[in-house]
Image (cartoon, rainbow, N blue to C red; front, side, top):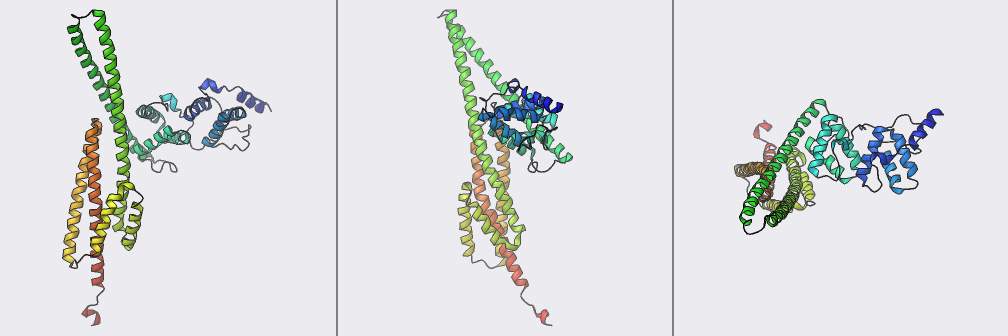
Length: 399
């Protein structure tokens, strides 16, 4: 009875506002504040407080339901007698705001904060935290997906990370963050250099005009001019960043599609039992991808050529197949070189160079996929011919 009274007293005395909670905030900010309260109190007490106040406020009722789902509480009638919160596998001590994480910040700033949290708690705990809160906030969902890509956490939702694998992925992500910090430092130095050059030029112009105007007038005018130039500079940087981010996102999506079909096309020949059936299924799948339509049209032309092909000599077919393979290999090498160029373009904030390079890569993919499949069809034809020849009886079979 005393324990129950103590729990009720604690629950009623929890002031969520003390932890930054406000119903006017968005989902992610409210959940951050709630998590802060949970770190200092019992999760069940916080949940009951939200549930009680939720009788009068639909937002708090919604947050209570979210807490029950995120922390996996058995809340059909969320018993006050529960001694320990049922938190599942998620580390409740990971409080991202302690590391400067805030959903309203820019993407790179959020990533910096995530890095600091990872250094203390490890990638898995931070990733799981972002995944849980990402159910309620699209920014946190995006950050969880970014961490999954950077760390290559394709199976982290259901499997624990092996120690050696975790160390390897940590090294990879540390390299990514190091590159990001170096780029941020480079951008800062570039901005400082611009301001230094601006101040020197304005000072010279000010000195030249001071003979014709009063000092107070020229100082005022040039102060205003400096402010306008700085504002214009910041707006241009922001605009360029937006253009670059959009270009990167567009190409990344295309690259994911290309990589997916490159892998599937490579597996066609390895799974040679039903080559043409598997190929037909793959082409049907491609029809759903807008970026693959030009490639698909060229593949259909190749299929038509094979249907009407007059080549029956094995040596001629082998010659055509080898030619296709050589051309395919050459184009893939060109793509590899351009991908390196693309990375340099992005590092140097060369928007025009990045767009030109990625357009060239897409153009080469439009050429290489039909050639690659063409070589596989030639290979399948050769295999069928050779198998057919092997089944022809020979004289010694009748001896």
